[in-house]
Image 1: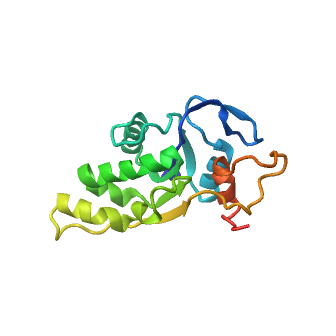
Image 2: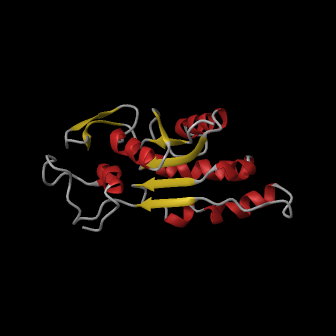
Length: 189
């Protein structure tokens, strides 16, 4: 059997000057902003093979290019059983789960982990299986439905007291460093 896979969704695309890379340089992000090394390392530490989707996180909807590409990959590869959404990708992850619950409810049972970082406008509960089970239950015979269950790892943005990685200029925004913060265990300082 192949190793389980985690599909990693990038944030929004942006021109140079918007979002810092791992060294704090504000580079261009044509396929979506994400510190790929930290996100992929998290997947590895959790026992997953990382698959980073090179599609930007905007716009956010069930019909967005990123949501469509993620669903295509999910259905093509049965080893995909975890999702990691960063920033715009985190918002799209909610739309992906809505789409699965409404159109392919049995597919929810394949998911065992949802990771959302840098998407503070949606609360953690918006990604929990208990939010999608009632939707899915309406799409199948209610007596036959067995609730889906998965773990949710959720973090808005690194807190102000969290120290940026060594070498990153002081005053650099912390949003992009959510993946590094997660690797560090999401400390509060």
